[in-house]
Amino acid sequence: MSWDLKKEIGRKAIHLLSIFFLIIYIIFASTFSHRIALLILGFLLITLIEFEYLRVETGMKIPIISLLWRYRRAKERNKLGGEVYFLIASILCLALFDLRIAAAAILMLTFGDLVAALIGKRFGRIWIPKLKDRAVEGVLAELAVDLIIGFLIIRSLVNGSVWWLSSIIPSGQPIWPIIITMALTATIVETLVHKLDDNLLVPLFSGFNGQIVLILLSIKII
Image (cartoon, rainbow, N blue to C red):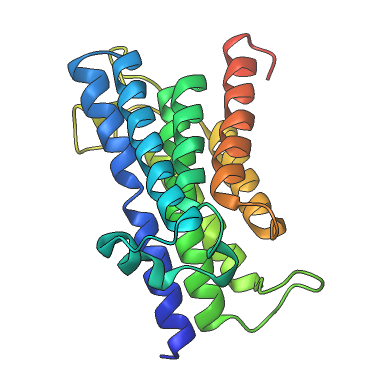
């Protein structure tokens, strides 16, 4: 395993910590309210931005933050870290979209991006012309993972609730128009975006498109 791949694994492992954003939201929303849960995430966002201010503007070295930054890309050295954009996107998704769609959008970025990078760098043989570091193998792997996430998360309500808040066994019917729309959107955005931050764009674009399809389904247009 090359050092570059090791660093990539380290970077993507940090993304897994982003699942805690969703867990924190669910805990506080179910215990208190939707608004309180968003305020808690807002507090975490402000805290992250304050740490980034200390790191970027003052050069202060904070032990835990410095350890995480060993795995950052060079272009992020003097800019906000990807986790800040991811938290911004998570807050917007949870505030604007159906919970199933918001959760799927967050998880598609977390796991889809991870699989695309690792499979593409480790097993990539067919590289997409004019797209930097994008292998067909990685793109297909991401699409497959996104479809699986959608299949598990985006299902019809059971007794007025999403199944994964009260059970470990999937129930309800998969809503395939939304699943396919979100998986394709997340994969396409992740593949095409290079200069902008995919941590912000992937959840917002996939979640927005999924929400539009949900609305169209609810009024029987599609």
